[in-house]
Length: 366
Ligand SMILES: *Cc1c(COP(=O)(O)O)cnc(C)c1O
Image (tube, rainbow, N blue to C red; front, top):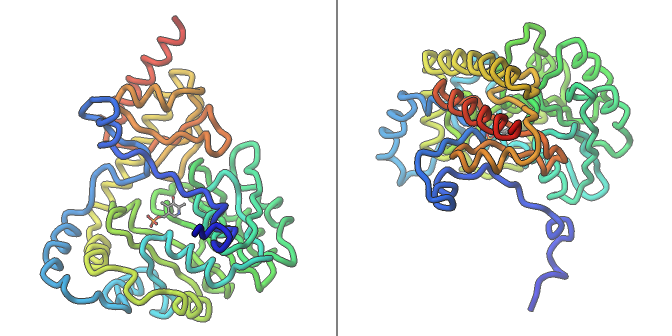
């Protein structure tokens, strides 16, 4: 008996998320070793040593359920962000926060507006609830076209997602444009601001998203420990909003969604200012280095406020870099076969990438 006529049609139609290629898989396929991965925006410095130590200590307690209220992590963030305890919701990665929003606010007939190309999970969580994605193309500079997004908001719009800085382009919107956009939205549309990369942003006019949370009910800022804190493998992210909105997401949430080790690691990571500072500094230097070196090779890149770089080295580059033992992110799935997304690595990894690209460029000239 097939269940093909029973499965929800919007689930049957979903295309699963394609993660970056694991290093082990590449080494197996090509029979090589020493490959590097600059594909999933992970922290090249690894996790904070203090987070590792906290996980070791917490291991003795894994026969217990985790704290369903994530009290320790909540208290830390209350202090750091200046919000009330009931303004925070935690998830198994920021991905789960997106999923909770979809579960609570989207169903058949509803629309979610977001930019495109942007984070691949937005259409997945939207379609996953039977709702309709409304994807608005980025402008010519590959920045969110906020005027076009505002114009796309209508009767059926329930959620608007703004990814800032934007994945996979690294581009961002500034406070003036963002404030105008946020002020124009109807009160009963949920404004989700995905700030997975906010800690890497350098532009002085970066929007004050928490200011919007304070003055516009129905605003949710989403952040994660996967990128800046180097805890992608432990899965912990969070949302910041007004107490009413957070209350709905809490109802949609399963009680033990943030595991015991993840919470311990996140608390310790927040205290490791040295690790966070080094991560930010090394990333900024890496972006400046790679933009300069790629420009010298005639490869176009875009300004980035994140921990990765959008580059346009031409078609086939992803596959050719794989043969050099370097995994970047292909963007053919976004209709950008000439572009790749490069995660900023350690200085020696960035240099290895530049050398490989130089070889590819020289081969092409021959
Ligand atoms: C990585 C990422 C996330 C999700 O991160 P988690 O690992 O699920 O916490 C969310 N949004 C954007 C834009 C991302 O790039």
